[in-house]
Image (cartoon, rainbow over all chains, first blue to last red; front, side, top):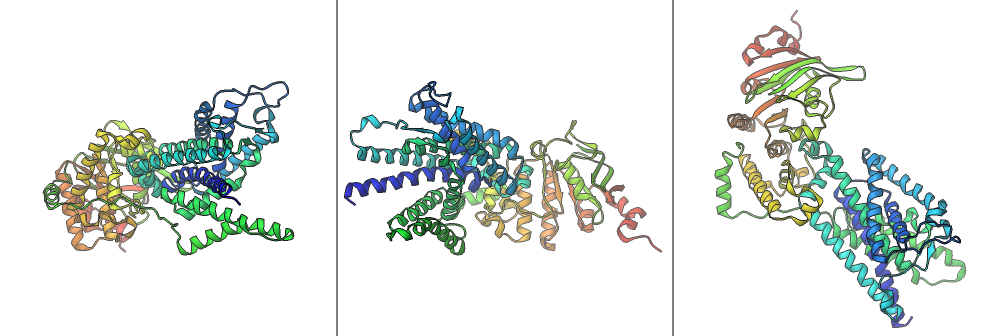
Length: 333
Length: 251
C-alpha cells in the first residue's frame, strides 16, 4: 500500500469514526445525561438521511419510482435533515416518552425497524431498495483530486464533531444539563423539585434526534449513496457499544469509545489468510467488538472515561465566614 | 393554607385513605401521626400530586391543586421530602441543591447554552444560598461528595435542605427524624422551629411520638385510613381513641 493510499485509508476510517462519534454524542445526551434507553438510534439517522436526499435529489421524472425530489442545494439538505429528524423524534417521543426504562427501549427499537420497512417498501418516497446513488458531495467541485477532497471531507466531519461536542458539553455542565441529570437520577425527586420531567426528556430526545440527522448528511454524502440496508440495527448497536466502552455520561468518552471501537474493527481487515478462512475472518470484526465490550465491562464498568461531576471550588476564609454568618438566617428567607 | 377535603384513595380493593379531612393553618407546624399502614404516606402522596385522589379535593391558598401533576404542585411552593431520602444519587450534594430551585433561567436549551449574565447571576445567588443552608446543617465540607456515598443521617439532612432550596411556602416532611441520632434529633427540632419562626408552614409525619408532641402545634391522627382525632398535642394524647389505636383496646 503506497503512502497516499494509506493516508486516504486512514482518513476514511477517521470519517467513519467522526460520523459514529456524532451519533455517540447524541446518544450520550439521551442516555448518558438524561437516562433514556433509546434503541432507535438508527431511526432518526435514517430519517435525516432520507430527508437530506429528498431535498437535494433531482426532480423526479416519469422514469423514476420516487415522486419527491426538491433539487435544492446541499446546504438546504444539511438544514432539512436535522429538522426532519428532530420532528420525527418529537412524534416518536410523544407516546414513547410516557414509557420508561426497557419499555422505552422496546418502543424506540420497534420504531426504527418500522422505519426501515417503510424505506424498503415505499418506493414513491424512498425509491425502495434501489435508493439513490451518485449523490452530490459538499464542495466536491472545488477539488481536482479525490485524495485532497478526502482530507477536506475528514476536516469537515471533524469540525462538525468538535462543534457538537463543545455545544453538548456546555449544555451538560449548565443548568439545563443538570436538570436532565436529575431527571435521569430520580424521576420522583425531580418532580418534587418542580421539574417537568416529560418536557425535559422531550427536549433531550428531540435535540438528540436532530443531531443524528446532521450526522446522517455526512453518512450519505460520504458514501454518495443511500439504500435501506445502510440503516440496519447494527448501527444502533455499534453506537451503544461505543458509548459503553467510552463511558456513559462523558462526552469525551463517547468520542474515544467510538475511536477505539471503529479502529479495532478496521484493523481486522489486515488479517490475511487463504480464501477458505476468509468468512471466519470476516466474523473477526464482530469478535473484536464483543471482546472489547466484555473486557471493558469486566475491568472498567464505567467506561474508559467515567462520568465526572461539578466540583464546587474551595472557599476563601472571607467567603467561609460570610456564609457562616448568613447561615443562622439561611433557613429563613 | 392547605386544606384536605374528604380525600379518599383506593388501590384496587384496598382503601388506603377514606374520607380524610385536615387543615394546615398558615405558619403552624401540623403533625400527622398514626400506626403503620394508617395511610399517612398515601395521603402525603395525594397532596404532593404523586397520584390524584380517588375522591375529594386538596386546596392550597384558594386553588384546587388535586389533579395537577406533581411538578406543578411543587412549583406552587409545596415542597415534600421522602421517607427514604435517595435524592439524586450520582450527583454531588452541591449539584443536588443547585438543581432544585424553581424557575431557573438556564433550564432551557438556548439559555442553558448561552448562559448570559441573568443566568450566571441566578446561579451565583443559588450557590450562596446552598452554601448557607449546608453550613446551617454542618455539611458544607461534604458538598462535593456524591449523595450515594452519604450516611443515612446525612442523606436525610440533604433531603431537607434540598427542598428548602425551592423556597417553599409549605414543607411536607415524611419522617424527618427517622434514622437520625438523638443528638441530631434535637438539632433538627431546633431547625424546624426556626423555619417556622421565619414564616414557613410545616406538615410533618412521624412515628416518634415524643418528637411530634414536642414539635407540633396541631396533630391529626390517622388510623386505618380515617382521621380519628385532631387537636393540640395535649388534647390528642388524652384522647382514648388515639390510645386505643396505638396500644390496642384495654381489656
